[in-house]
Image 1 (spheres, rainbow, N blue to C red):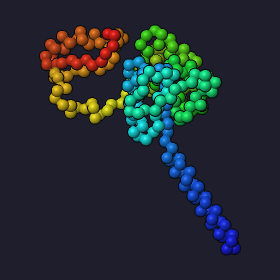
Image 2 (cartoon, rainbow, N blue to C red; image 1 turned 45 degrees about the vertical axis):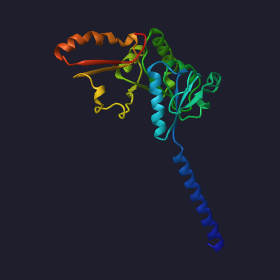
Image 3 (tube, one colour; image 1 turned 120 degrees about the vertical axis):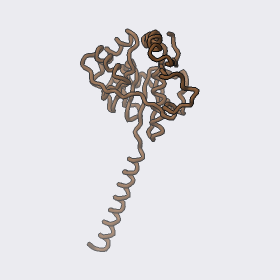
Image 4 (cartoon, rainbow, N blue to C red; image 1 turned 60 degrees about the vertical axis):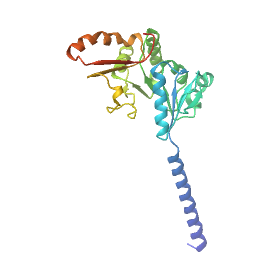
Length: 239
């Protein structure tokens, strides 16, 4: 090589390496983004807590997590980003117009909009359970129409998966339990929170299908064997 040719080749290689380094850095800096979707925010009972804390923890891990809904009656906590969904755009373009890597719906009824078109990104459906006949029928219809467009179905419990299988025979799902903030919930709680030995704790929305009365009615039998037992019920609702 002549001196000029050597200089040109070296210069080109340096530029190439700089560009490669820039692309690698850019790729590393771009975190995955996840959009939690419900029809209306706040959603019903446990849905809201689940999506709030999923977003909080994902954001703290360096991801971009936001909540998408067709309407917001209030703003979520922890400074979580919100995205007001456009039904017309979803029906026309599907989820492609949403600037997120993963779409994570938490209600069957939003699937009619999210999956009106073939999705160009993963759609992870999160099943929390169907508490009445309308929700059961809605889930069955949504699965009949859109099951093959869903990348993955997860449930908060084995009971949820069993309920899905009763409603839709041919369905594949995986349990991912709700996370626990061990700073708030741990065995080393201050004494004022410890009552009874053993201590029994029921934390839930107080809805009829939860059947908390069965637990309450069983307490006399439990006390015969464990006279120091104490039941605490935490929650609110119509029941």
